[in-house]
Every structure is written in C-alpha cells, then in structure tokens.
Length: 150
Image 1 (spheres, rainbow, N blue to C red):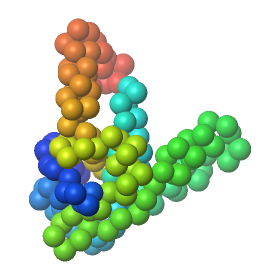
Image 2 (spheres, one colour):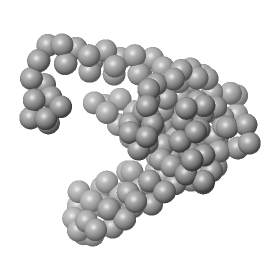
Image 3 (cartoon, rainbow, N blue to C red):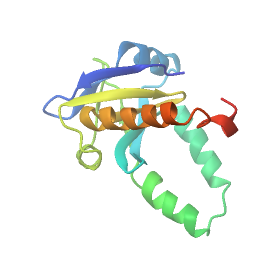
C-alpha cells in the first residue's frame, strides 16, 4: 500500500521522481509499468497513478459493468480514455505525458498523495486548497464520515 504524501518537482521534460517509499511498493510488484489517468475531486483536477497490476484488476472490474449503460460509457471515455501506460526509469522517474500534465495543470511543484492501492499527483497549490477543504468539512461536521463506518 502507498502511505503518506510527498512534495516533489517536475523537471523541464515533465519527468517526476517517485518518492522512495512509493518506489518500494512499485518495485515490490516486480513490474516497472504504471498507468496514469485523469481524475477530478470536487472540481479539482489531478492524476491517478496505478501500479500496472492494480490497473489490470480495475479494468477487470469495469469489464463486468453494463456495457451500454450511458454512465459507464461516459466513465470509460473519461477515465479509461485518458489512461497512459508509462515505465519507471532507472532513476526512479516517470514521464507524465503532456496532455495529462496539462489536464491536471501541473506546474513545477507537485504533491504525490497516497490512496491505498494507487496514488494521486496534484499541482501543489491545488492540493493545498483540496486538503484545506477536506479538513474544513471534517472539522465542521463531526459525523461527516459517520455512515461510512470510519
């Protein structure tokens, strides 16, 4: 599992160094491939990054859904259509494709945030806002997570 969050920078070519703790998880899977795709949280754009085996499991779950349901089609167009397979290079970096960098408005400073079996890449300023909004919701409503059993 991925744990924690880490601030990093994109280089001029769009390469991102994966934090050592996240790299350990990826290397432990014996596959240097990842899949990056677009995602949105509360109208804030970011990127989801999956180890290749987790992405394949996810695809298997999507495959079980009703093929002609308009919601599934929209989801496939957005999430699967935006996906790009990448490899972690020898220096532990990934090259984020230009379209995905543009989609998530990634500038130089980014934050990688764990989401259990995957992680997200956020523009640093966007992440600050998303984090502050989440904190505010949790502080204002003590029962915010109540029905989730957390």
